[in-house]
Length: 590
Image (cartoon, rainbow, N blue to C red; front, side, top):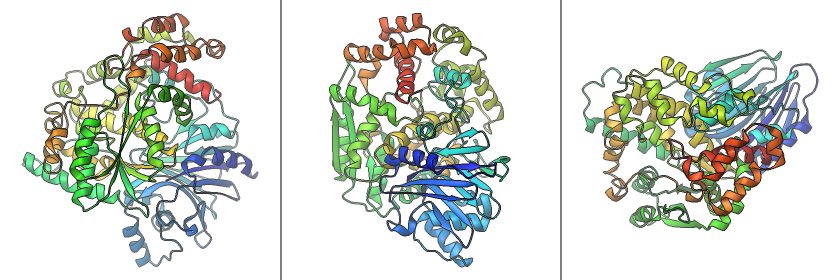
């Protein structure tokens, strides 16, 4: 896991090594172990390295193979790299390192951009071909690894984070109205290629882009999820599905234990992370380090789930670490959390993951985490009603969207009020998704869009702020492909994730399966009172916010007068959502 960046020039001039160094410096927390820059012809690539596989200097990046004429910068992990390496050796390729980075280089030379089809892992990379001047970008199937870019006059820049792009300068930082609408309506989900800034875009997941030496490019989507039964599935029983699911989850967790350093688990106490611990124990792992975080109660709402994480830690004898965050530390940490965000992310648990990652990074460089199970296996409350939905778009929007269009117009300056971009995005997506029923369409959009630009992005940003690699076994594409075939009724039954829960009973104690559904609680940021309200008011009443003119101040005053009265359908604070956007912009000098 690392940070990548670079500049590609199409005018015949040399790329700016200075700009690349600025981006690489901003990415230093993602890769604290080593760094480098490589410039040749029309490109300059930068890299920050976190040593996970092949700890030697042979795996340093940017990685250049003079015989093949290829240069690579890569962020992520290819879990099946050893099998691919053996296959490539049988084709005559010779290796100078033992890690996964060089496997990408050789695989690209052997099979071209379609090599990504063979990769099981999380990745974002750029490869330069010396002889043609061509550059290829690629991103994994679920966007687990980020890829931002900026189109400038006669050149492109790219990086693993949006703040790194800003560090190089020359970026148009005007607010993008389409992205703003998504942020305010779709619970801060801003789908690619958009970001809040007009001058920064992001590469779509499951996509590779071939950029020619003259700047022309073409995108190819190399994978897409298919929902619904396939041939041979019709006669399968619930037990058959459980058997297949257990087998594929075993493989997924085992793959994500591949490393030349120890691997731990972020243990929330819920089904998903508990199952990961159980599967690792089943595979014989002992002395496993597990980590949980909790916060002080607020508004009568409990701020930790240690009761359940302790059950798993005790059951499997893990080396368990509990981190309890006092309110004073939570408040003082918020600015650092905003700094770690590539984009404004409204979920309260950002600060939880940030503080948890800091503690974990003192012990380990790699953890497995349970993100994705709710989207893939139907764990949210809006899925069961969609089994019988007669208007999929309306029912999904009612459950997920934060405001009506009328309220959006009350909240935002008129210059940003236009089309109903979020509703139209969902309409187009549902019309084109390979998903036969309304519930399948909802599962599809949440797995392939919402998940990418909310939970997955959150985990990447907060863990990598401390040089910690987070691996997500529920987003192995083989797991997701199988889940898509399982009948929706077996997923959403009994409050969701039914088939996953029934399979998990073979592995983990039922006490953590049959518990009430939990989430990562940070009550103080939902019930904004006392010092938290003053903290928020300091940003929203500032001259910077007023001069920006993005928000209607009468609306802000209404929210600040009674924060508890303005909660979204997904139980989020409307005040926190708007304040977070302003705090993020001020933090990054926008």
